Image (cartoon, rainbow, N blue to C red):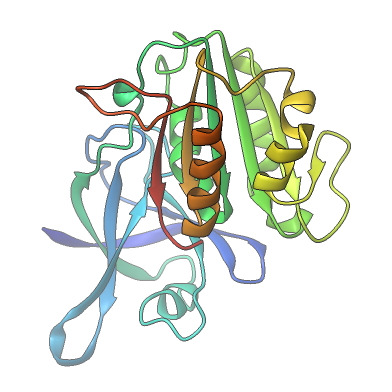
Amino acid sequence: MFRETTISKRTTWAPGLISLVLEGETPSFVPGQFFQLAVPGEGGTLIRRSYSAASAPGESLQFLLSEVEGGQLTPKLFALEEGQSLHVDDTPLGFFTLAEVPACEVLWLVSTGTGLGPFLSMLRAKGGLERFSKVVVVHGAPTRDRLAHADEVRALAGTHRGIYVPCVSREEPTAEGVRGRVTEALTSGALEERSGSSIDKNAHVLLCGNPAMIDDMVALLRERGLEKHRRRTPGHFNFEKYWS
């Protein structure tokens, strides 16, 4: 059921890329799940879309949003400022969670754009990542200014015996990063060299973001003999697609 809430904080990372923090009581959810956000449309209807929570459970709901030019909802969301209202459905949905990850040594969290959102929630939450020996966080973006939350992600990865590897495709990355798309960085070997870890059957890969990136990554992972994880047949990767 939708309720009206207020934007308590808005952060602009780059043109068409923002974070919104909402006021009000936070519903129970598991990192990786998503909620529906909505604004009023014509005739009293609500224009709605699903977004993964970027916040940890118990903290104010936060979302990382990318504006879709000509879209029905995101231009309206981007027009909102702090103190203005929108609607949120408090029912969490989805199974893109750490509970679905089988036992493994290294967990890879690979995203592009706002696909970083559910991984932020996992990194910010307490207790979910301790069972992995290492966590590698990969975030792909065209330019450095679109690497939202970079400082926080770097710090959080370090607390989980991990590393942050940004992939920047249209300009030179920072010293810790890799030049090129995520798929290119995997193919060239730069991604594994920079992270100091291999993507093999001792690892599990969670993919979130642009569907084209995910399709290409899945093909590359299958070339290595890795398979999609299913509850009845444990595998080595899982994914959630959405445009970002």
